[in-house]
Every structure is written in structure tokens, then in C-alpha cells.
Length: 625
Ligand SMILES: NC(=O)C1=CN([C@@H]2O[C@H](COP(=O)(O)OP(=O)(O)OC[C@H]3O[C@@H](n4cnc5c(N)ncnc54)[C@H](OP(=O)(O)O)[C@@H]3O)[C@@H](O)[C@H]2O)C=CC1
Ligand SMILES: CC(=O)C(=O)O
Ligand SMILES: [Mg+2]
Image (tube, rainbow, N blue to C red; front, side, top):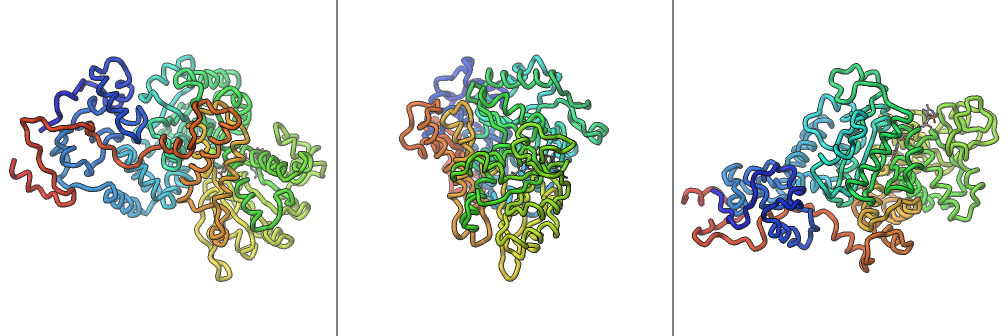
């Protein structure tokens, strides 16, 4: 029985996955009404919902954007033509969330939890995002590091349903046409990888798609950026991972990576195609590219497009946020410290450069600030005359006039760092000897083991606290459980760019910033630091609890908006007076939509079936029919 009034029913021949696009096109025969409906909901902006008159019956269940499962009310089920297509039970979204929480937790294996959540996202989008939004502490380790790393490693095996765009080197010359296959026309944010450096796991080729998908899930769950505005992309230019090349389950191009001019032409075409398709303001977040391309692409594109590299800039921002907070515990300025980085790559150099900026604000000179930062890479300490060279790019800023040194422990003994930062994916490098030695001369050493996933961390939280007698200030890229030491339970903070990129993206998108400057990341660091309470510090954490990331993201976005209007880099005018309200008005609503038109009325000749309370509908009414 379909009681949907004929007056609001238009074409039914549409592919349900292409509805928003279709609705915006002139061929929608009931376009006026569709548009009216789009604009009618005060909490939604145009394009937020799919034109209801273009979908019929079972599509409401099949389309994850529309599906509410058992939360469809009786009126909705009847009006939409889905009555009888599901069991007669009615549930609230809250009841559904309870079932989801139970279902996730009943799995022993994290990968199974990941698969459950992926399936939920494919089935009921609002439920998925609300579940993430309200249970981030429990689910961040599943949709993000560490489990997302495992999911990427097993991608060929667990691949069920595609999500995001795969653009291969063979599509060169046709990238714009390929982008047109993506059904959503209003994309505002893209996370792109070429899979060359997935977390600390190396080259995973096309299996790296888990990362853009996971990062964009956080765009929505942690910053309310609407799912249809987000597009995950994997650029498949081959892989140098021999194991994958030989793996029959590998889902990417079975060839070695393309590099050189061909790759550059490809990436340039890609960037141009994105802007042609989605406009100059589309935000493009680079994620997990190999080191040699990450820095190059950032330099090539940062003044031309709306782009940033999360591994370089987002990581820098979260680490500096932690350092700003740690000042409250050490009672020292950042510039009073001696830094030693293990790793001199994207994350480490990004952090070093932003730390220098932070030190400048403390009154240091550039030279003085850089002199406080020592770095080690695969060839040992960055010193000016080392035989290997390997001092390209910004590494040169931190290379010292010093003898060649290879051993971390020897370097620690020599320079006596008070801040030790690991971003080398060198698991266990901060061993007992290293940590005990740091603790021997420093009362409150800062130890950041930032490498992901957990198996790549330079040390565990337990090791850090144990070997420093519970005195260190510790943070890690992936989560570690609480540690009890000397009768005190310490909750380690998670120094992960997830605290930064959702808020930065929200601020940039909502104000229409064209180019993302370093200042925005220092603003984000400061806002993150402001969020940390005395209670957090007492628990031993220099970051706010994970369930506050969403509040933190909004605050970062507000500050970025204020800055953008003050500096004249916003393109959305007129300037909104109330920035918070303005940003919130653009954010995703995690609650279900009402799929019925606002002025919905039952056809006169048919009496509507009186709905009982959604909880007590047992089927009695059905007997009368
Ligand atoms: N917590 C967070 O939010 C983030 C964490 N990360 C993590 O940081 C790690 C590194 O990422 P990223 O900087 O992008 O990678 P890069 O490849 O850019 O850098 C790795 C650096 O580590 C050096 N290195 C490798 N092995 C050793 C070793 N055994 N001893 C000393 N140095 C070594 C490399 O040396 P060389 O320069 O000579 O090659 C390079 O400088 C990854 O595990 C990643 O997951 C990254 C981004 C965000
Ligand atoms: C967190 C992150 O971006 C990384 O490990 O690459
Ligand atoms: Mg990354």
C-alpha cells in the first residue's frame, strides 16, 4: 500500500544513488516542489537531503542516506511504500544505537568490529555517524589507528563494496570525466592518498583507500562536515610492495610505481580536474604520500589550491598543542627545552618547523630556535658533514656542526634532550636504556611516541612511565590503555592529528578560505591546548579526552573563521556576526530526517491509519485492514 499523494510523486526511473545530482538537473519534472522541500528544513542547507519525490519504496531502505531501518514510523512506512518490507517493530534511533553498541562490542576481533561498522555505514549512514559521534572513545581505535592499518593490510580480502574514487595512472588524460562518475556534485572536501606510506606500514598501494575513508569518517563524526560533501580518493600509480604485487587478492594495479614527469603530469591533471569539477575552494587534504612527494606537492600546490598535508601540518599542530600544554606541567617555555627527534620525515620536520614558530612567539630568534632542535634519521644524527648527505629539504635547517653519531642512546647521552619525539616508525627504539637515561637528568621529560599504528610506536605508555618512574609527560599516536604506577593511574594522551584536521577543515570550508597558511595550524594548536583542563593534567594527559574532539573541532573552526575574516582570507561574505552559529548552521544533523514533505496531508478519500506510540505497536492495527 502506497499512500504517497500523487501530487508529489515525480519520476521514478532514477538510479537511487544519483539522486542529488538528478534533482539539481533541469530534467526533474517536479523541480519546483523538490527545491521547495530542500529549502524547507531550517536546519539543513540545500543539497543536504535527497529529493524525496525522486525515490520510491524500497529505495528508502536500500539507500544508506535515507534508510532509518526500524526507526521509520508507521506513517512513513505507509507513505513511502515500504510498509511490510520490514518487521512491525518500531525503534527510536537511541534504541538502534544501543543495539549497535552491543553488536560492535560482541566481536572479539577488532577487524570484525571494523567490518561491522563498514557495513553499518553502507546500510544506515546517520546511524553510523551518530554512533561514531557519541562513542568516539570506543570506536576511534576501530575506524582509525590502529585497526584501520590492519584493514588496509587486509584490504584485498575484506573488500566488499567500493567507497570513494580509485583513479589510476591509466586514467591520465581523462581524470575530469572520471570525476563526473562520482554522484555527488557538492563535494567540499577530499582526502587523497597514493598509498605509498600508509601509517608506518609502508607502501600498501591501492589498499591505502582505508585511510581517506577513515579520515573522512572523522570529518563527519568529529566536525559535522556532511558526508555527501566528502570524497575519499586513492591515486593508483602502482606499488613497489613485492608482496602485494604477487598477492592474487591485491585489488590495485599490478605494476611498479610510476614516478618522475609522468607522475607529476598525472597529479597536476588531478588537481586541475578537482577544481574544474568542484570549484576553486574545494579542500584537498594530502594523506600518507611518500616523503619525497609529500613535501614537493605541498610546496607546489599550497599557494595554488586549497590544500594541506595532514602528515606534515596536522601532525605538527597536534604535537605543538601538546607542547603548549606541557608548559603548564614543566613550568618552562618551549624554548627552554632541548629537542631530539627520531625521524626527520613528514611528521618530524612538520613538528620541528611549527615548534620553531611557537618558539618565535616566545621571543626566540630563528637561529636560536633551530639550534634547540636535534634530529636523527635512518643515517643517524643530522650533522653537516656526514658522509651520507641525506640532508635535502628542511632537514638542512636542523643539521648541526657536530661529529657523526649513529646510536640513539649515544646521542641522548651527548645532547641530553628534555623532549624526545619519535616519528620514525621505528618500533621500540625508545628502549629501557634510552628512557632511563633521559629520566636520570630530567625531572619531567616529554616523551612522544607518535608512530602509528600501535605496533610501530617507539615505546608503549607502560614502558615510558615505568622507565621514568612515572615522571614523564607521554603521548602516543595510537591509543594505549591506562597505566598504574606507584599507586597512581595515568591516562596517556593520544597525540594524533585527529585532534586537528577535522576542525581545520570545518573552519576552512565554512568560510571559504582559498589557501591554508601555517598560521591556521598554530591557531589550532593553541585552541587544542586551551581545551585541556587541570583535571586532564592530573590524569596525566596533555590532550583533552577523545569525546571532546568534536567540541574542540568546533572551537578550532570558530577561531579560524575569526582569523580568516580579520585577515581578509575568507571568501564567504557577508561576514557572519555570530561565527559559532554560522558554522553550526552548516553542520550535519546526526538525527534522522523526516522524509515526508512538511505540508504532507493524507488524501481525503483515505483515512490515515492512526499511529500508536512507536513503542507499543504490536500489529493490532494491521488486523483491522
Ligand atoms: N601521530 C600522528 O598524528 C602521526 C603519526 N605519524 C607516524 O609517523 C611515522 C613517520 O611518518 P612520516 O614522518 O610521514 O614518514 P617519513 O617516511 O616521511 O619519515 C620517516 C623518517 O624516519 C626516518 N627513519 C626511518 N627509520 C629510522 C630508524 N630506524 N632510525 C631513525 N630514523 C629512521 C626516516 O629517515 P630518512 O629521512 O633517512 O628516510 C625519515 O626521516 C609513521 O609511523 C606515521 O604513522 C605520521 C603522521 C601523523
Ligand atoms: C595519523 C596519521 O596521519 C598517520 O599516522 O599517518
Ligand atoms: Mg597520515
